Each structure stands twice: as structure tokens, then as C-alpha cells.
Length: 581
Image 1 (cartoon, one colour):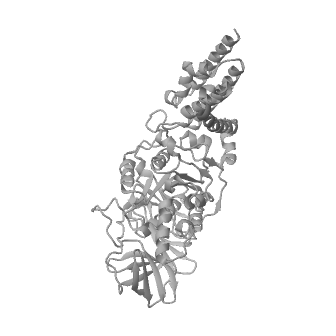
Image 2 (tube, rainbow, N blue to C red; image 1 turned 45 degrees about the vertical axis):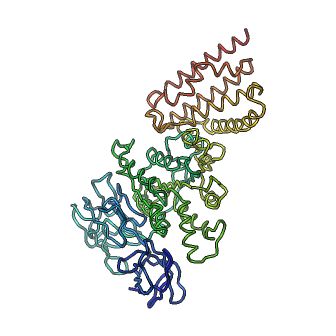
Image 3 (cartoon, rainbow, N blue to C red; image 1 turned 135 degrees about the vertical axis):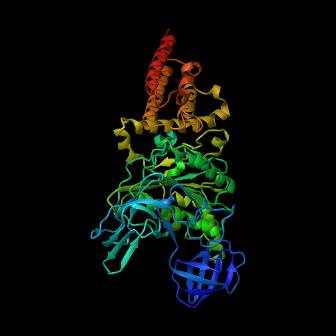
């Protein structure tokens, strides 16, 4: 084991004089408390270590010991339903209100293991060696991606601990490796795949502003920037509950303790709409609050991604929520400053962009080593100071994501939920997902989407004019545009998370609503040309019913949209007849 002695320390960063060889990114333990750290610089016989825990009490002369391997976390079937810190140490099992310092091996849980291999069988790298029954859902047990050979021993079906040897494999080089349910994996190393698949399937969230206007592909990458109080955490919780992912990995990275406490309190109570059981049963929460050591905050993002890749390799679709990447970037900045590195823009390190790329590029829809399809969809919130989207973290993030859901302070203050600004947001997955919507019977979806966004853009332009000359002094065409845009906002973009009817909206219901709104716009234009005034349309009771259709017409009442459209046709026919009379 490599050893060194501390010669200098500043916060989470220390320098030590080495008496034996260390490697870059090697995990180390520091002092009698065995604080976990990682070698981040080697200069001759001097190493620089980033410590992931509180370094209070450390002093020169304390011994640093190396593990001989990179920073790794244990991945196994016991992850589902658990709450962990940034280094994947269980918090739900803690008997104290604080995270105790030092390495503590996680208690090995027992699961019923059903073997899928026999003695004498050739085992490929990453192959399935068995399944785990019980818990929230059946899980596969995989061989490590770097292990292949002949099965020399295999246990019978039964109850075993996560770390108990289940299969013995004689590798090509000769040594025998024992495989258990739980395996260690270096968090900064992406798990290998057989190949990437096109992102031509949507991750459905049940939120109309996302699915219909700014969709994200399964295996895609999205950013959710917004200032303080715009609802980033609530929005992520809503997406986690309703998206069609098999597993949710929620990483609370450097957020305030009360926000993380709210997540930890609410998630175990939420009902999973897909199974009727608790949502927490298919969720992994990694909690790293702002008062925890700053270096662990930097590691938590990679820990969450490694957990997501573990479930992806089982052929599952995973949604990874990172809240927030700005706090992660601030941890990079603090450690960089203590290292004395040359600062970049806004004092962030020059490698901020490359670190963001390393994180987001691990998302994707892939073919696993077992030949199955799996995916990781990443949704990361960004907390730009003062809501300034031109700051470095937001700017660099936009280079690596394809969906950008900008949360607006004014909408949030007006209690408009979700507070996604339709003119500041965008999605680059629209073209690749158009064919999917066509298979759902929505061949006009791209046209409806463009029409709604053009209408909202006209609204922004006309509202600036209305503030100068007054709405009543504007031409009838401009008044009708404002009226129709307000209807799109109220009936389609606003969606209450507290409404039993409207908190989730299926693709079929979204299509019916878009079709009805598009028909309303056509009829309104025809009526205006026939001499009908916008005020007459706004005063009609049907206008209010269309504005409230999300609340009034549920998932099991889709025929109600067709009936409402028929009533609209009749009402506008009377409008035109009265105008001609």
C-alpha cells in the first residue's frame, strides 16, 4: 500500500510527501478516521489530494494511504429505494443526524438469487449471471465488463448477501475471479456499451410544454436553468414522478438542506402512477447538501451517473435528475482556487467545459453488452446568479444538451406552472421525434407546434405595443392575436401539479387538445374576416370552457374534446350569421 505524509493542508486540499508510488485519480484514506480522498496531482515525490470529507483536525505528519485503484463505489441490487450521500454511503441506515467521517462499509443486504449460468459455460463480459427476486422489481446480476471466461463454480438458488461469492470464473489469463451481486466501479470511468442507438423515441413526461413544444428524446440531455424561486426542484420532482423511465436517479448536488429535506420527505410518500406502489421503490436518491464537504459535491455527479449506467446495463431506461450542476461547478471553482490554478471566466477553472462534456456525454440510448436496449436521459438544473443565462455554466451547458427549458421569474411570480418560457426554450430533438408522433396519429404535430410558437412570439411583440398605446386602441387583428395567445397559455401551457385531472397529460390527450386549439384559431380567423369582434369571442362561454379544458376533460373522456369542437363550430357559425345579418 502506497503511503505519504501531509506537509500542507488548506480546506479539502492537502499536499503530502510520498515515500512510494501513487497514481493519478487513485483513491486514498487520510488519518486515523480514514477520510476518503483522491489524488489529483503528482509532482515528483509530492502528491496533491482532494479530500471528500471535513478535514478539521488534520495536520502535517498525518499518514495518507493509497488503495491502488481509482475512486470507486459499490453497485448492487440494494441501491433501489435507498438514500445515499455523494460517495454512495447509505444515509437511510444512519443512526445519527449527521454523516459520520471515514469509510464505513455498507451493510450487505440479502436477496434471493436465481442463477442463470452453469458450470462449464463460457461467460462473456457483462453477461447475465443471474437474477435477483424481491424488492421493488426483479433485477439482473451482471458480470463485470472486464471479466470473461469459463464458469468453474456456481451456487444454487437461494438467499445470499450482496457481497457473497456466487459464481467463480476462470479467466483467459488463468486466475479465478469470484463474482457477487455487488461490484465496485470507478465513478469517473464510463461503463462500456456495445453501441449507440438513434434518439428517435421520446421520454414522455406528461407535461404538455415539454412533450408537445420542447420534447426530449429517450437518452437525450436537457438543461433547466432558472433563477431563485422559479421552481426548478419542483419541476424535476414532477418529471421524476410522471416520466416513462424504469428507474429514477435523483442527485441533490449542493442544494440547500431544506430543499433536500423536502425531497427526502416527499419522495417516499409519492405514489408511483405506473405501479400504484411507492415511487421510492424504483428511485435512488443521492443527497449532498450545501453544508457537506465541497469536494464530495463534485464527486456526487459522477456517482449518480455510475448508478444510472449500472441500471442501464440491465436493459432499463433511466432518468437522471441533477439538481443542480451550478453547485457542482462552484465546487470545481473552490477546489481550483485552493490549488492555485489560473482562473477562467467568472473564476471558474479553464476545464469547466470539458468536465461538463464528460458528464453529459455519458447519457444516451445504447445497445448494452447483453444485446438489450437501455438508456440514460439526463436532466440537469442550472442556477445562474440573478437569472443571467449568459453566465459560464449555462453557456457551456448549452453546448452539450439538446433540450433547453428556461424557467422564467415573472411566470413563476404569477403562479404560472410550469414556468417554462416558450420563447427562451428550445429543443433540437423535434425533427427526430416527428416520426414517432406520426405513428401516434399526430401527423400535424410539427405544424401545430410551429403555429403555437409563432403565435406566442407575436404576443410578445404586440404586448410591447399595447403598453404604449393601450390594448383597446390596437387593431382588431392584433387584439385577436393577443386573445388567442392567452388561450394557448391558459389552456395548454399552464398545467397544475395539484390537479388530479391535469397533473399528467398523455400524448393522446395532448394531441386532442392541440387539434382543438388549432381549430379554434382557424374559426377565430374566419370570424374576424366576417366582421366578428374579438370581444364577442372572449365573452362567449365556450371561450372559458376551452381555457379550462385541461381541468374539465380527463384521460378517460377524450371524446369530450370532439364534442367541444362540435360546439365551437356551431357557435362560430352563429357568430358569422349574426355579423352578416
